[in-house]
Length: 161
Image (cartoon, rainbow, N blue to C red):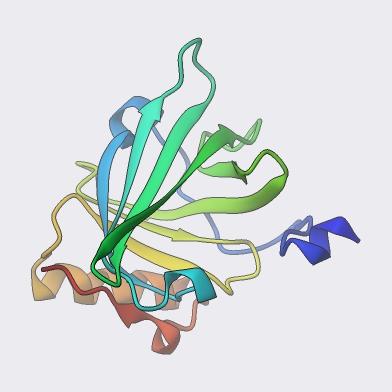
């Protein structure tokens, strides 16, 4: 019941994830290029996520931020890899009790871009180390998402100023 209330339920299937994520390489700043926006993300620009390894290892500190109404809005969370997932599946916890699935379904060999979804494919993010990936790279990312069964028509491009 609580999983449904907070938008998280156990899924045994979903989009195929990448086989392995090097968490240390994944850490750093990611710019949101496009997303299926949540209610909280609407009217946002300059959206980015910053990941840092938490002291003691095993967890990742997450700081998501954007510009909304001329001001910066941000939220902090903790991400923990799911055992046996090669670090490609994480559980992200906001406010100590709201949990969300974060599945890395595409990742450039050089960690220059990433594709993220949730198990039921209702949420999706295209992330890049730069706010302006070239058109060919963006088209390739969209095609990879479609191959994973993700409806890319729902994606909204993120404005970066």
